[in-house]
Image (cartoon, rainbow, N blue to C red; front, side):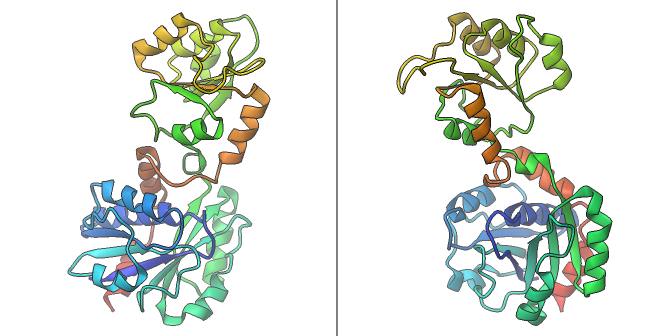
Length: 314
């Protein structure tokens, strides 16, 4: 077999998710798959490490590859998916291209214009961030434009959500019991009430994977832990504890978290400021973590793999 280049005009277009999802669908159809990341942007090293960690990746290159070495990385009978940095469709020699196009407005993005630039190198398009209600309209648009649509990937909470590590960094948080949880995806973050009601029923009903609670509400902190919240985010009510100081969380709350190894993030920010920073993270963090890998495979399960493989074989 050979290789193909995954290209997008702008960063955070869903290229890495598309590559990982496409690789899993190829592998499930009996193909040996390799994932390669080219150098050229700040996310290259992290993406290469992610690719190397994936059990279905036959390439296992833990470092990004220079563009002029891409042809040498595509060898044998393996199907290689080569992710280029944003805007890098002219690199990697003459590898055929799968274009990744965000289609938030329900159209076909700039797929038609890029087809004219790429010519015969363009094998097809993966549309990303498609509003679910516009899915049929997007498919019809690609048919009308005469562009092969390999897959239309809908907007997705899991792919857009930050990881626990992203949240800790954004909140300038002190972290307790976090080891091994850095890549947990936090896609259901809820704010606790300020009521004296312990609220265990409230937490259990919502099934959050993180709960934001003020530092002066230990009863609600315990309620969240007892309801099985996988992460507790404790916000300040006045002057924060300061870097290096012990977080102002009562010892029995910490002990309860230790029993189930539940991570606690303490931020010197108040709840409103903390939520503002969290909102800015959604859709802006890199693709990482087992939950996102699995979700990418689910979202590309209907990808037109057969026509893609046939086009590669020509």
